[in-house]
Length: 301
Image (cartoon, rainbow, N blue to C red; front, side, top):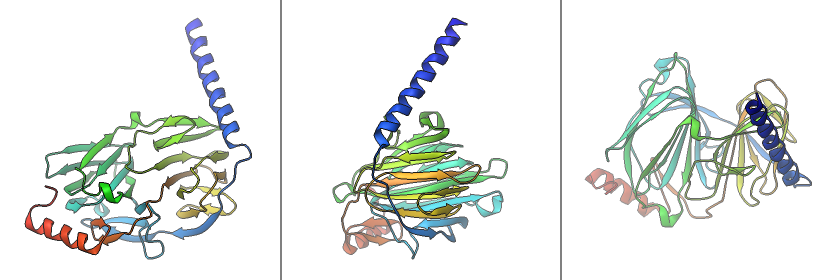
């Protein structure tokens, strides 16, 4: 009994400490404004996987350093089971976050991994990788997100790398009845396991009340509501992506049951961007070189 009392006392003290730090950090803090609200575009990719392109569409091509954000999800295996057969990447990082379902991934360098409910794959394509991502259904349901993060010029040709992050390695911070899963960056002195090559904050938030989230001044930030509804100066409903102003914190209030959202922010690279399908470099000549390397069989070597 004494051991149990000590355990709960420590939990209460830790929660109070986090809450005090949260209140001190966010008092009198500048609040970010919503500058644009964007709806995703229904499309397909890979071998016909149905998805919603949230970032990387004609309406919003990129938000430096972010190149693409897709939400994939269906309870119909016919819409996703063909997956993403072998395909190349160069010059950026991909972050695949699974809410439900499973993915097996392999590459031509012999790397192999497995994603499950709640896990993350952080892949640095660098100078080049050819990989496949093939889904396995979980009771018919598959749902998750893929984010593309640009690499700075000096790191575009680094060696490819994988970091598979299981669910129990992703910390969750509980504050004011809400839960904040820290995938990358820092929230309330809790650091996420993602290791990007530029500054990135990536949070998955179960919003149940009022929450203020600090963001580095000068970083680009976007908030995507994938369940429920929030208010942050303007109302955001399920499927809305908000592009925020450059400085201050995100101040948001829950407006519906079961609200969940992604908050993604990053330090801009402020570099030229040249895109060619699965390749993202700084110049058109570098894109041409990427295609030549891929066709000649020297890709990634």
